[in-house]
Length: 83
Image (cartoon, rainbow, N blue to C red; front, side, top):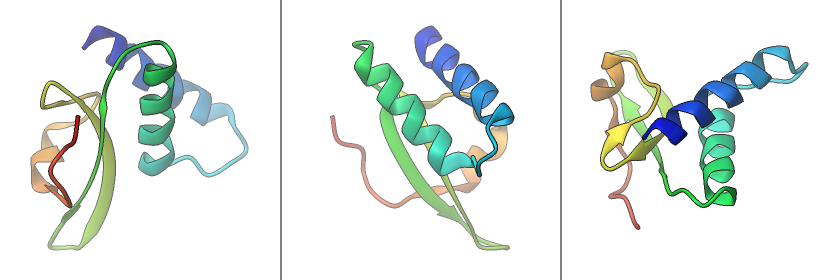
């Protein structure tokens, strides 16, 4: 879990200085890839919340979202995670 948190923080830090759009989709994908390349596993998840409708992507380790606020529970994942 610590490695996943470090990966998310690093990706978000780099994203702040890039002259590109970096949102949850890019952050979750980059974090999951970075972890995989270094030998760690994290699940890439995406889901939807209602009222208002919004989409979000994140990574999970052992069923726990990494680097997310408490409102992550508002999101219903689109699929069950696969190992």
